[in-house]
View 1 (cartoon, rainbow over the protein chains, first blue to last red):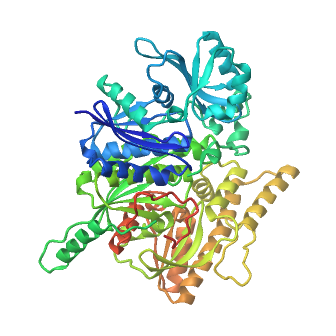
View 2 (view 1 turned 45 degrees about the horizontal axis):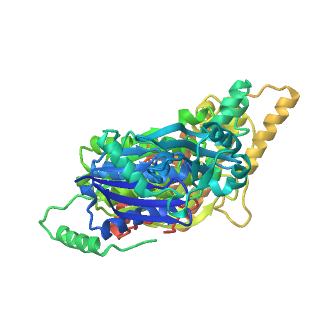
View 3 (view 1 turned 180 degrees about the horizontal axis):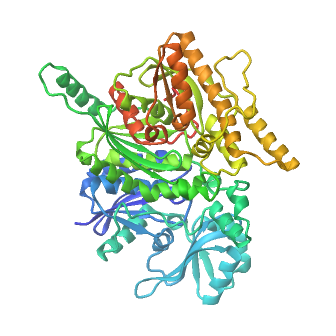
Length: 256
Length: 364
């Protein structure tokens, strides 16, 4: 019997699931306030109690690996790494957008998960199920209008999902020239079960990593790093090192 | 936020009773301490609150130097990359496994929230999965507790001066984990002043050690900088005046084309800060009637401060305690020590423990 714990905390959604072979034995999802650091472990505890699971029985921990809220990703990641260290179990890095696309398993349409990255930008990717689950466009950060242009190129029906949809609905409606729809609520956001189920697929393919190796894949550098690169291009490194403009993404992302 | 885990408490009570009996072998209490509040990822195993079995620190200083200071997001990213390695190393250096550990202690504030969260989430998950008690530790309580590592005879009560990049406090340590704050800075922390001055004269980051080093070749009386007193609060500090005076001096020199003697400037600035720190700490010890004085925090590793404090304490008949430099700057051994005393007092945190970036000293 294969048991995988799935952890998802890349956005406003906190979600924990256990998949036992072909069955989701428990899933606990909260899409309320961003208090993952307080809620995530109690949610795991609750799930374990409900299904009388001793965590030592699991085979691996699947974690939504990004992109997403920097802090949210790290809470999930550190939780998974801590569990992995203590239980001596491997981790499975499930790209967040892949797991979201997996919510719509089997559809004949293109699947486009999109996460709000602010300022009309989204973290996005394009997926389809043909013989198997395929990535059509690798996860990246993109302007919403540019994404619409990309989707138009495929000339196929597309289903969009994620918290980037409501924020950009108007732009999408104005710019999409292919048939499109927005996923219904039960599959429109991140789900721990999708992380666990796709994680189980990776696990059987041997795509695991050690708890020590695991780190989130942010798809975006820290603001200070971007500024440093810009400064290097302009030959102004000395000014930056003197500390005149050390900005940082975490001040926006830093809510616990 | 605090929760008594009845099951654990019962078990521990039995254990305590057992160990209390004469003739029975005392069971060692091993604390795994975890620290990630700023730019050091650290883990340590401490036996019975005083014996450091391992002390692993992964410093990010080199990484942040290019930015002229700690960048919170970059610090947080580094923490998540290093934390498991650091913890595994701490366990293996101590020649123990997680099974041997009694409880997990972690810094949950104050500090950079994103950085703290990595350690807190990690510690909670480890404690949960290994079914061990979780003890949240105040970072500053950790700094104070660093004094217990090498001074086995030091026990509360005593006066402690806490000086770091983010804190300047003068406290009476009434008991383990119990503090009465009698003085604090009204503006910049002492270490912050060091950083700003170091940056202004081009010594770079981190300011404390750079100024300390430069000052060794300088004359501490070359320039006179003001020693601000806070009216009616004899134990409070103010460093913005000293800092501004130094910055004004630099600007004036730049305008007149005068060359600045960096060692003299560093020594004179450092002397002004050290004098402010030493005079208040010794005054507090005398007035409150304590013959023991300790220093803690990153700035406690400053050589001029240590020398001046030793001299002043000798003169006043006060025993002076200070941790080795490695236990002054951020480390997890101090968290293991503080965690031990919190654990023995019965402090337990539940799985919803959060990082509290502005956690006040003495708050739980």
